[in-house]
Length: 100
Image (cartoon, rainbow, N blue to C red):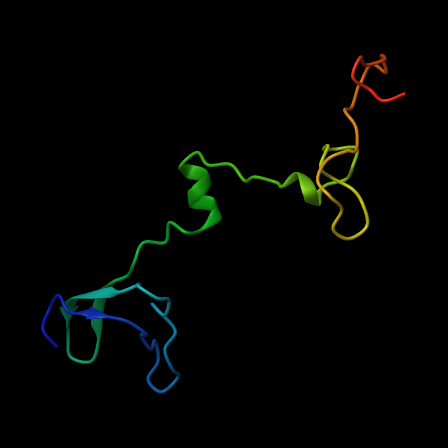
């Protein structure tokens, strides 16, 4: 194979099946060859959660999956509808638009 060839589905040990670069669109590039081994440039691993943290991205927790006391969309058995039936008033004051 000439240098610079793009490769996918790479075996680490002969006969064990492809173990590297198996996802759709991922390719490794052949950068050096020796007798029975080769050096490959593998695709970037920026898909890991730790490196997303290095980029300053924080995880987002959906409000539906937390408890009702933690988020207005949370709580309920199974899949509850999003939100409360009425406007929430944390100070328990009477609202003008509230049904009586």
